[in-house]
Length: 429
Image 1 (cartoon, rainbow, N blue to C red):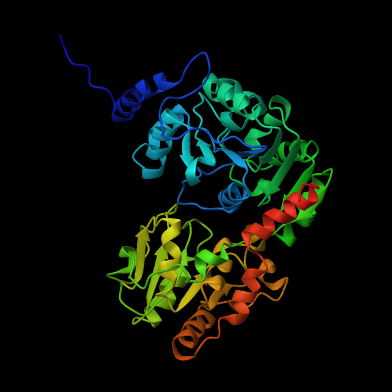
Image 2: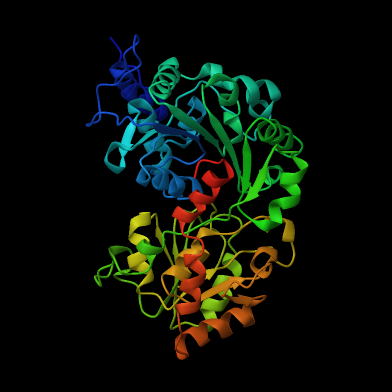
């Protein structure tokens, strides 16, 4: 008998399939993961994009933790995994998403947060067939039924449920899940997403007109949100965990991610995607060879073909809880976004979490200039070209910095207070 050699991606999927047997077909319960589900009066179902544990920690994961700290039970859904992900199974986060999908749920924060990465046959995407209306509106029917049964059963155990959506693909939950209150969180102009031009606005409008409240994270998104004709809207900007980033909880031990990096260093944290101006960073680094420009986060763009000096250092993924300690060893935090002058629409509505995290950590913040940073008196140092950037890095190296103004500004946006604003707008505070 001949052995059949399967492609690596198929072998990986086959190896994971048996774990689905741990679901009960009758009750939708799982017998893995330690700890009993916590029950309480209030629950929130959060239908989001990035997994709760992802290296990409955006506002929704922070809000999930704040809900949990207030005693809510959190059911956190991220974007579904599909067979199309097998083509990228070698990528660490994709591989982890597939494994998590096969063993969901995972419990966090002492069991207060129960996170799911659902598995579906298809899910919406910017590619031609996957962005078609029939896929966008009916993909959920291809989800493994156990996940839907478990979620619905858990929600019915609570006296009050809030449905929170930030992923357009989860609009169907508004017609399927029992809930008492609903929120749609807008962090971007959805029409900017590759492949979704002319299609995303309608999906967003449908959600905004059904939910009790639409919240948006930046003042420059107000016109876009108005175009959705929401029932009620409120500006609730991104926040920061001030206690975590203030340094009070940090040791002086140098984190492994930067242990071998030459000092002094300036730090960028977050996804390294097409918004990040690596060309300007490289030019500044050549003029400041004694400074390390540390790019800390997952890389979504390739630097092949670029001539990057040795003092531009990529660390890869660093756990979010390690970022405060890393910041304690930097002389400045940078927000080197491209397009601020040439393509202002590319940064419409962008109000990065990292800016507040740098301020809470007491760092001077060196940021590209765009509308959101100029709309209010944010205590950052703005640059418009590489000469400005070099001058500001030199200023951080040679001048003492008083962090008090930045920390006071960050304290105005503590995540606990931002969640309080959302609940107050729903008359739940």
